[in-house]
Structures are given as C-alpha cells and as structure tokens.
View 1 (spheres, each protein chain N blue to C red):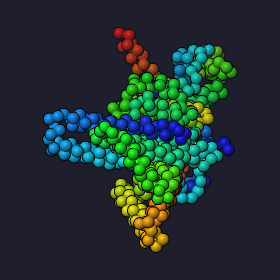
View 2: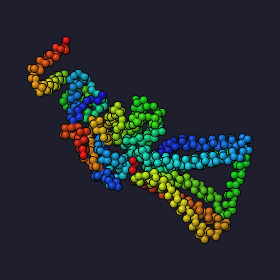
View 3: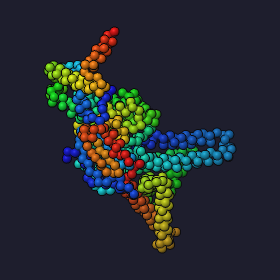
View 4: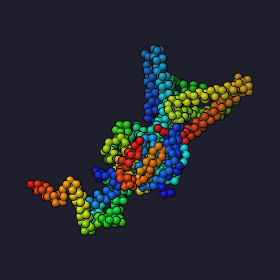
Length: 264
Length: 232
Length: 123
C-alpha cells in the first residue's frame, strides 16, 4: 500500500511542479542566449534587468513549490478529499510517510533545477575544473585541520536529508495543529508554522551560542583543533536536533490523524 | 458474530454537545437500512465513527467483529455527501486509483455502468455537472464488492431521473451478504427500498424497526411517521 | 417504471396483489417463468427482501412454485388461477357496489346504468 500511495502522490503533484520547473530552465536558456548577443553584451542594464528577473523567478519558484506542497497535504487530508484518504485501507503513518517522501524528493529536484539553471546562465569554460579544485581544496583544509573528510561528507548528507524531511514535516505539523481548532483553522496553521520555525531557530541559536561560550570551544575557535571540535559539535547538535524535531512532528501528526480527526 | 455492525454504549461528546448518547445497535447482513433523523441528530457522527473518521468518547463499535481500522476499511464502501475525489482526475485515473487500493473493486462493472451513462474514460470530473459527478462517485462505490455500503444522502440534490437511476443501482447491487446503510432526509423517495429504519434524534435512537412492521402497526408511511415524530 | 405503491400499507402485501393481478390478467400465463427476485425488485423499485417475502407468500398460496435450478414459475393449475380471478373480480364488484350504494344507487339501478353505458359505447 505504501508504494501505491507514493505512486499516486507522485502522479498527483508532478505535472504542475514539472511545468513550473521547466519554465525556469527555459528562462535560463533564453537568458543565456540573450546574454550572448553581442549588442546586448555591451549594455550593462540588460545584465541587471535579467538578473533581477531571474532572481525573482527563482524566489517565486522556491516559495511557490513549498506552498504548493503544503497546500497539497492540507487539501488531500483535511478537506473533502480527506473523506477518501482516511477511508482507504491504509494506516495514517503511511499517508504521512508517502507525502513526506515525495515532498522531499521534489524539494531535491527543485534545488537541483535551480542549480542547473544557475549553471546554464553563468557557465564558462573551465568553470567545472575550478569548482572541483575549489571543493577539493576545502576538503584538504578540513583534513589538515584534523577533521575526517568521510565523516564530514556523511554528516553533510545526513543533514541534507534531514533538512529535506523536516521541511514538509514542519508544514504537516502546523497544518495538523491548526485542525484542532474549531474555527479559523487556516489561520491557526499559519500562526503555528511561524511560531514553530521561530522556536526552532531560537533553540538552535541558543544551543550554538552555549557551545560557543563554553570555554572548551571559545578559546580554541581560532586554533585548528578548536575548529574541528566546533564543526563537529555544530553538525552533531544540528543533526540530533533535526532528528528530534522530525520524530516529534511525526508523532504529533500521527496522533492527530488517529485520535483527533474531525473532518467537516 | 452474525451481525455486521454492532455498537455498544456509543457516546460522542463535543465541547458543548452530546452528539451521540448511549447508542446500541445491531445491524444484520443482507439488509438495506435507512438512517433517518433531522440535522444534528447524530447521523453523520455515527457514520464517521463507523468509518473510522472519528473516535468515540466512550463505548465501542465493531464491524464484522473488528474495531474500525485498516481491516474494516477494506470491507466498507463509503459514499460521503460531498465530492471527495480530486476534480482534476480523469475517469480512467479514478478507476486505476480504486483498483490499486481496493482489492474488491470490480473495474468491469464500473466501466459498464459508466458506458451506459455515456461517460468517457478521458472526462475530467471538473467538466461534469453535479448530477453526473454524483453518479460517478456512486458507480465507484457500488462497483466494490464490499460487505457494508454506507451512502450518505445519495439522492439529495439530484434530478428525479438520476434519483431513479441511483435507487435502481442500489437494488440491483443487492446481495445477501452485504448491507447498505442509507442516511437521508428524503424518506418518501427511498422508503420502498428499505428493509428497516433507524430514527435518530438528539443523538439517541428513537426507534429501529422494519418498514412493513411500522406500516402495519401505524397504518402510515415512514415519511408520515417521521413528520409526526419530529414535529416540534 | 416503478410500480405504483400505496404509502400507508405494507409494501409486501401490495406486491402480492400486483403479481396476482398480473397472473389472472394473463401477463404471466400458467406455467410461465417469472423474472428473478432482483430483477422484479429493481423494476418495482422495492427492497429485494420484501419482494422475496411476497414471492414466498405467493408460493405458499400455491400460485407460484420454485424449481430448484431453473427459478420460479406460475402454477400450471388453470383452475386455481380462474378461481383467484373470480375472487378478485367479486372483491372489486363488492367494493364498487358499496361505493354506488353510498351514492344512493342500489344493485338494480347500478346494473341498468351499466347497461346504458355499454349501449352508448357500442354506438
């Protein structure tokens, strides 16, 4: 059943999202073409205007995609469509998992498309080699500072994945909490969302500040071994924090769906 | 465990309202049962609880001897009062969807009924009239070989021809292992197809009896009786 | 077309009457096979259990009989059908005469009116 939910979730959201993203790529291609026209190359304001337009497009796409994913969840679970979703012979956690998974996948695609479009616009000869050299340089610095490269990469990936999962789960959490109210459910969801992300940010800042202030780190921030400790610490704290919030959100959404569902 | 649905001391309380109070029911298989009552009588609450869409405050409900959950959802085919399908989907995609999630879905049966109504596989729900949309939902629900069909206001707001079609579909689909629970206001239209009726008022069962018994005892139709019982 | 049924009498007795009428009027002749329960119920727009109850009653009366694998048939007993036909006719006539009496006509007068109307029909 989980596979089927994933399949149908993908089917339901891919077309509109794909259209939006292909549009961005097209914009990048057109931009690149325009930029290569000799006449236009001389005019600085052309660059500026295109850049602004492009940035606007990217921002719209990013926000639009995330809003679309959040609204999709709300519509499919807590409006009339919820009457179908919740009477399917599947458990609530399967709904949450399938939607979280597809949202994460699409966010990843989204990021990849944006990167691709940037590359299309600014790609120049030798950029590839420069980039790889730069990246290897960072890795060398890290290993010289005594930080295990492999661990660093693994942590980076894990954090990335957790970020992709935490993003939709935060919406699902906020939307579900909003459902507990008798009126103004949407408003409650939005407010919950803002409160939640602020609380998380505050906690994150507090924790890292504590770590900074902690003498073991403070003195050595400048030294190599301190850097290692700091980096490791921050990454670990972040990872654990993300994990805890993800699990917490999951449990709350699951509970609300199982015990506090009240479709109108 | 011969009866299909059994509720024991079912209670549902909202903040300031007792939606269902001590509901005790036993519904057998092979019946077409009417769930009648005015707005706010607890009909939709009862239906939601049976479907697992809501949790009771106390008491329990058993469907085929089991609590509401994945197993009961497999054998219940529910038609809610609203359009619960994604309006952007084409008919063909809806059939795929139902085939995927419901083992008891008979695609061929649905295709025949849709064809008889001249509904094409490529039509999107969005382009259909209200009546056609309702028929599509009904066809999807009735094409499952479920043990319990719950139809919430299936004939409200449709023209008489559609209403006849819907009623005939319900009768034609009958089998003695399954039960149909019909919730409605429009009693006179469906009275003839009911075996028994349950009257709900203020969250409690006023009575539960067979249609013919009532007619024999009271000398009037269910519709007339209903008007008297609920005259305030 | 759903059968016309009275709202305040039990449905199954009305179904029994309707099928009796169909049999005596020849719509179902002696020995004819009648449609299966579900089909009849759909045509009449009534509950299949109620239709079944009516058919069982008709079987009890001897008007129908079931053959295990082939279905339900009207009895071959022409005499029984005729007897029923006469009974139903008498019933109708009794009701009619009672209604006429309430209008102030006795049996004799009623018969003359019928003869008059019949003559007019032929002209």
